[in-house]
Image 1 (tube, rainbow, N blue to C red):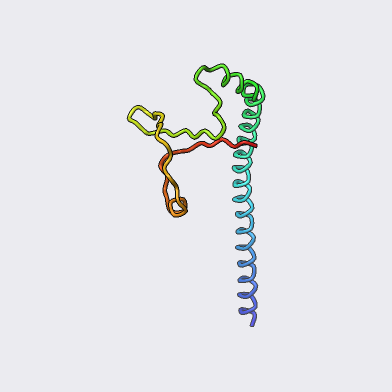
Image 2 (cartoon, rainbow, N blue to C red):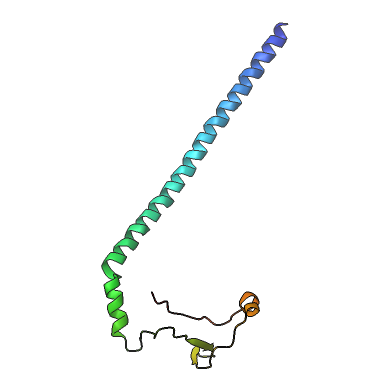
Length: 122
């Protein structure tokens, strides 16, 4: 009877020790994972700060507007003006062909290859 009691106590102490060691290793593993995430988080915060600074100092809407209006090739589109571009080897060229007639089926099942920009009038 003393041997069974001794073995049960040793088994209990062994299980308790294994659980304690497992718990401690999990604590260290989670701490290292948390430190890695904190480093990534700080890097993202630094990048966010730098981007906000760059936007405030160099890319304001006024500066962008002045840059666009200062270029010679920019023009405001007329109301409901549709611009079509055709792909070429050198890039894109302006396509002056009128738009084809669209039906309900072509709107639903049609796949368009061209990008179309339409202005919205308020």
